[in-house]
Image (tube, rainbow, N blue to C red; front, side):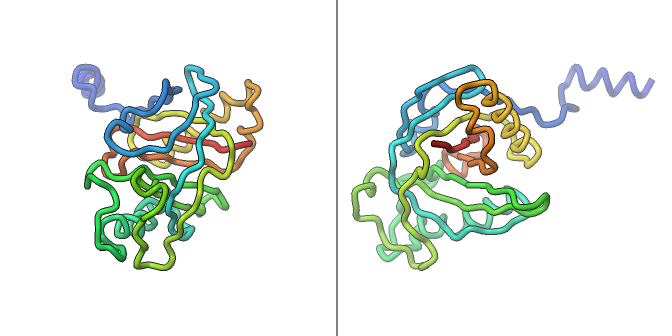
Length: 214
């Protein structure tokens, strides 16, 4: 009787399910880009489960690569360094992004080295007003300016879910599986993937998984 009651409660209240992840292809720039400066790209191929983008190269800043046990560890450690720089930790003492929330677009490159450790490299997108110069200098010498992307194309899969390691890895596997049956299958063999969040402080509007390739 107790088991039946629990099952009935789950059906009615719908609070007994685990985290649900929805992965899908896109239809142009993410909606968050209406509120925050985003890197530009052209969609050259689109399907229900993913899309292929060709990005324009742009200016980013990066923190040193870190060895961490989880993507949340990578986000926390590298994010602290870059966020402090964007939030007045620079030679001009200014906020580099215009709005405290949603914050900047970030990339997190993830290279799996072992089952328990991965190498994480974080990047913040430089707002449009600084793309051609005038970016305040960081107080920390470990923060560097870089031009991205290093590759011409990206296979992209948008994900609406909680930021949970198993869900993210499952979505990466789903993207690779979808790519294997296309002319872009060379991207499926790359061991590295990139996690993208549009506005660091807003965890409820989804994120993206990218796999870069030439």
